Length: 428
Image 1 (cartoon, rainbow, N blue to C red):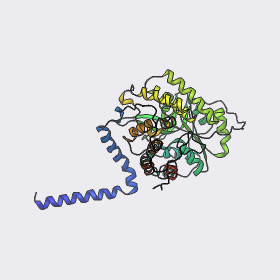
Image 2: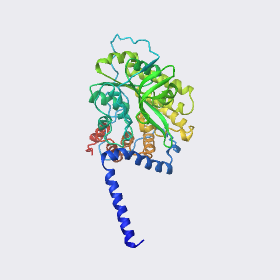
Image 3: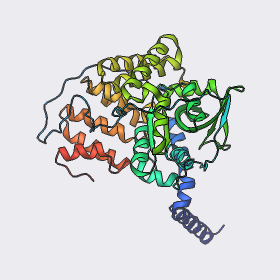
Image 4: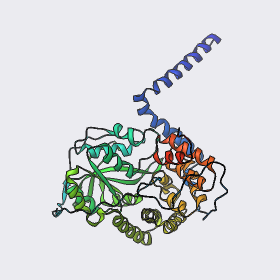
C-alpha cells in the first residue's frame, strides 16, 4: 500500500470517528447507546478494581478540627419537619376516619390498563412510576418524570420519597410510601384495585447485585405468584415473580412500597394501611420485623436485616442504636461470598450516613462516602454527606467542593443548595 493510500485511509478513519461522535450526541441515539457505553466502561473499571472485594470497617467517633475562616453552616442535631438533609422522614399522616371495610381477598386478582415502558439508562424509578400512574390515566411518561426526578441522565438512583413528592407536587394524583410490607399487604392493595411499586434487589449476571423498582399488579395464590410490570426485563409486561423470590429480594430495601391513587380514594388506601397510616407506627412495626429477622437469618439476608433495623431506627431518630445496627451489618458483610455482596447498596440507601453523622462519627461518614464514590461518581447523596462531615470537622473548602459536586450530579439538589447558601457561596 502506497504512502498516499495509507494517508487517505487514516483520514477516512478519523472522519468516521468524528462522524460517529457527532451522531452519538443526537439525543435519541445517545439515550439508546449511552447506557451500553457506560456498562462497557464500568466493566473495564470493575475488572481492574473489583468493588465487591472492598470491605468498609467503621472506626468510631471522631472529634472536629478547628474551623477555617469561612462561615460554618448550621447543622442541627435532629432533622426538622422540613429537613435540610435528604432522607425518608415523612411527617405522620392523619388517621383516616373512613368506615371502608375491605372484603375478603380473592385467590387471584389481575389489574390491567397499564402503559408499559422499558426504562432508559438509569431510569428505573421514573419508568415504573410512570407505569403506575398510567393505570390511573396519567398522560405523562418516564421522560416527564425523569425531567423532575433526575435531570442528569447519569444519576444512579431516585429515592422513594422523591417519587412520592413528584406525584403529590406535579400530578393530580396522590402517593405514599411505607416500609416493612408483606405479601398480604400487597395482595390487599391489588385486590382493592391499587397497583403497588416495590423496591427490591436482584443479581444481574456479570454486573452483580443491583437495586430495582417493579410495579406489582396481580397475584395468584394457587401458583404462589405475583405479576409485575418490569421496566428492565425484555418480557417486561406480566412478568411472573414467585412469592418466595419477592420476599427475599424485597428484604434488601426494608420491604419498601409505594402506592399511587386518585385523591378521592385516599380513605380506601388509609383503611388498608390501618394503624400504619401513621408513619411512626409504620417504622415501629418495620423495626420489630427487622429485629426479628436479624436474629434468625444468616448470610446476606441477615446483613439486609441489620441494615433495615438501622434504617427504621434512623427514621425514628434513634441514631445511636441505628449506628450500632449498621456496625453489625458491615461486620456481617465481610462474611458474605464476594459474588453475592451488595456493594452498590449506598447508591440507594443513605441511612448509615444519618446514623454516623448524628453520632459525631464524621470519619466513618467520609470513609463510607469515599468507598461509595470510588465505584461511581454519580451519587449526589454521598457527595452531600461527605460534605456535611467535612463541614462538621471544620474543613469548609472540602465541604463546598462536595456540595458543588452533588449539584453536578443532581442540579438544584435542595440540601446541597441550602448548605451552600448558609456558607454564603453561590450554587453553580
